[in-house]
Length: 135
Image (cartoon, rainbow, N blue to C red; front, side, top):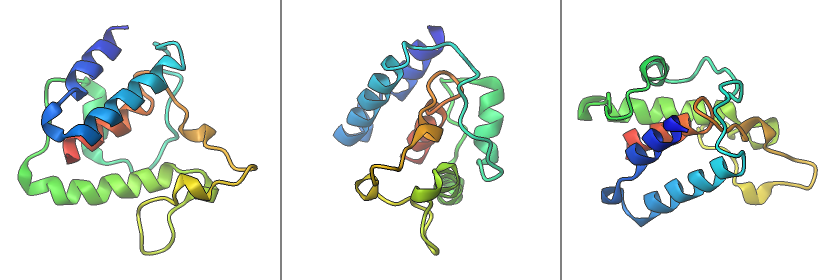
């Protein structure tokens, strides 16, 4: 699908290091597991904590533009981690005084992450795009 081509090209940035390249490869494999869906019905849960800049970007989806300036990168990082924490299933919600969720290694057999398994143009790609802006 065209959205995947645009997103993949936009996210591919070797200047962000090997870890970033591995992250993009993992995201592409994740999308492949959904058959590269076009479905916009596969959305992340609504969250009032989603950074406004991501909400605005979602309206235009201009993959070639990064709407951040250096001056607001620290604020965006705080907003992004709060949003990421809010998206998590209950068992993985961040502990108090921390915005980052519990590690996947703490997952028990009864826990799942189905609320995050959202492929397509309105799915996990929005989180990954936010990570790029933060990078």
